[in-house]
Length: 81
Image 1 (cartoon, rainbow, N blue to C red):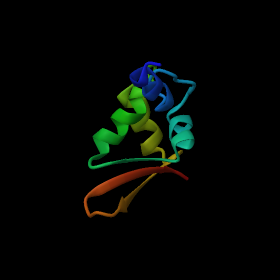
Image 2: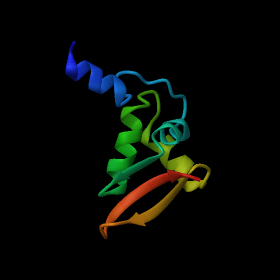
Image 3: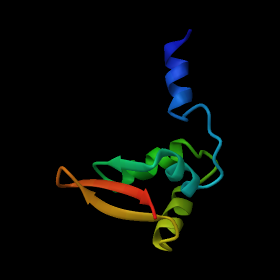
Image 4: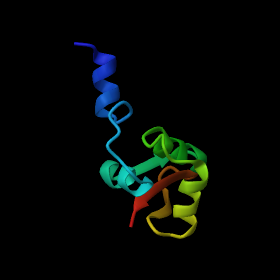
């Protein structure tokens, strides 16, 4: 068993069944990071056919995401609404 391949598959990095940023966040439940750009990177990593502009567009339209403060202070969390 290749533990690395198994972990990447389970983290949905090599197994990417999504067609939208909302699908990624919906499956994960939330994407948490220290910075907003890192949260977008985590979504884009699992959705290579998308672009930064597409993720920004979904966020700016408030179609799928809510940015909220989580503990500790300064941590961002993107959640499906």
